[in-house]
Image (tube, rainbow, N blue to C red; front, side, top):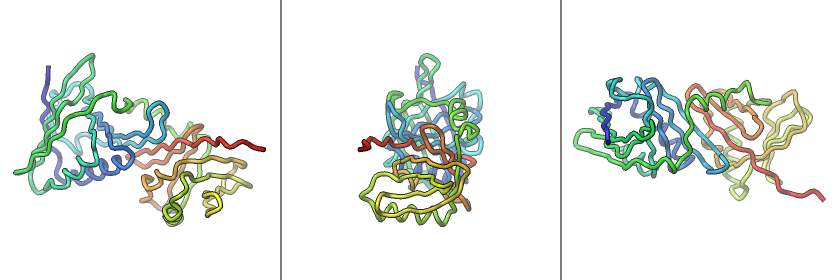
Length: 258
């Protein structure tokens, strides 16, 4: 049986919500929202069997949405396919007028999945069909919290905002390369692209490390603070702030030594 959830989106927070969805759509064109009475977890993923990149935001439900708590039991999953086009449509929403959201959803085996969404704003209506569970991996906020616990990282380093801005520009100029090398030699952390540029960014207490990651995801790293902090795990690099996490898997080096 199809059920209906009626919400209003806080007009003062709609711009923030749009920025979050636009940022996630740069990772993947499919976004998943997991809505409960306390939080909304929004995320996008690159990679199916192997996770190549994952970015998430955790926001307070009551800051962004208004609805009767007894109308939603447990967690409602909303999968937005074609998120880039959907975000562009939402840019026509006027925050000076009431923003209503209606979600039609079905519950099977204790999983509630949105089938249809419609946003009404004055004379404008924006609608989208909900995607299927098979389109994106399911990750709960409890599992995510454990996965990105920085206590489990192996080591960390930081880059100043201005230096990280230069690194992004260098990476963009030299667009033919696909990866950035992360090396630690004599306690110095150096980012580089082979035979093109290298940039010493920090000093740490470890030495002799060589890792690589896909530079496509550099623009998705939040650099709004004075420094960007990086946490190195066994298989991925993590950056985070109060609301968001970005995990980038390390690339494998298949070169054979002579």
